[in-house]
Amino acid sequence: MITDVTQESLITPERTKEKDATVQKRKKHKHDHAHKDSNSHSHDHGHKHSKKSHDHCHEDHSHDHSDDEESGHSHSHSISAKKVKKEKVITKDQLYHQASERLILYITVIGSFSLVEGMLGLFHANVHLIRDFMNTLLMLCSLGFSAKALQLSFKSKTNSFQFGYRRFNVLAAFVNSVYLLFSFVFGFVDNLHHMVEHWETDQNLDGSAASLVISTDNLLSNITTKAAKIAKMRSIHDEPTHILEMNQYLTLFTLLKIGIFGMYLYFESRNYNIDTYMQDNWFGWEPFFEKNQVKQKLKLVSQWDSFRMNLYSISLVIACEFIGSIGNIWIYFICANFGLIENLLSILKGLAIIFVAAPVCIDQCYVLLQQVHPEQLTRVLELKKEKILLIEGVTMIRFQHLWCLDKSYRIISYVIEIKESADPDLVKKRIEKMFINKYCQKIYIHIRQ
Image (cartoon, rainbow, N blue to C red):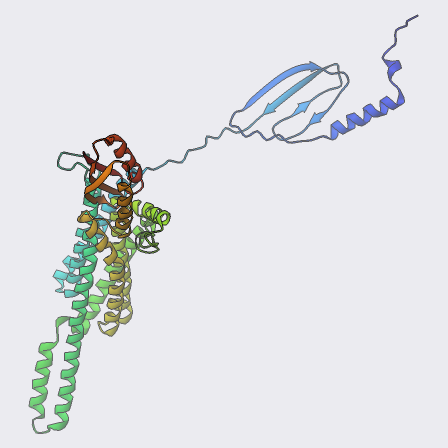
């Protein structure tokens, strides 16, 4: 006979202990759920459990279950919705546009107080103030041409300029380098003039002292004569009061220049990645037969397009003026004289200018003449010329010419004779594969059969 078995009869002492242990374990279970999304949501749902209870405790996510047959299950998620701002990506064209606009702003600021300096120099008949104003004006003209070149280089192509106006940047970089070289020459001549002037003054002072010892009869006449000669040789900037006034004005305007130049170098120049010019273009070249290393080097050189070269020359001019202004502060404010220290500082500044400006000048001379520099590329192309002759059907290379619009855009032209049975299209494809995007950006091939 089959009898019904009640649920209570199935509960044994062992099962009761096991159930109690499970419940206690679940009660102690605590964990955190990290929801990394920006959506806030809440939901409720009910379901049935047979005498089970467990709690989940965490910050934004809670579960409650009761021991009743019908238990409520609720979730609450409270996460603050934060919109993540995407970083704005600036393209090269936008970066160069901003560089041109900001350069014009710096030129305007420097030009405004330089104009005040020139007016004060004329009003007080101060030669040194006028000379400093003229130097600044010449520098601003050079920088202004560079800013205009950056703007012109974005113009679209025309029939007269089939490759655009990018070569204006090359011309601007060349002008800046020439300005630096001439500033060294004029500075050297000016310092030489000061040295000769001081030497002549000292010689006349020594001569007047000797004549006072030798001649006692004509003492008064000699003193008068020598004093007149020395007075004639003394220029206006040798007077103590004039020197003091001049040093005060020059110190003020030089401090303003240091502030403006320093701001440009700190906030602008370091954004253009121009500190590797010498390493990329002049140092570390491997022998021409190391083909892979030469390719890597040429790739680095190709990154120096006309825009980047113009920005480098601008920063170079401002950096040299910044160093020169620091040296002038030493002279005007600390030493307060135009003697040996000024000449030494000027010579050191001139050597630094020659070291950094001469490579840029030589580089841009090559590019202005549409020639390729450095020489290693020409040697690599000579090796490629031998490989062209090995192509099936090629009999002779009549003409080969390589030129460049800037350091990033090189063009090769070939006139090649092939056999009548050879396929001209196949020969062109094989030659293009050897050069395009490796050594040049465009190639012209004229086939003669």
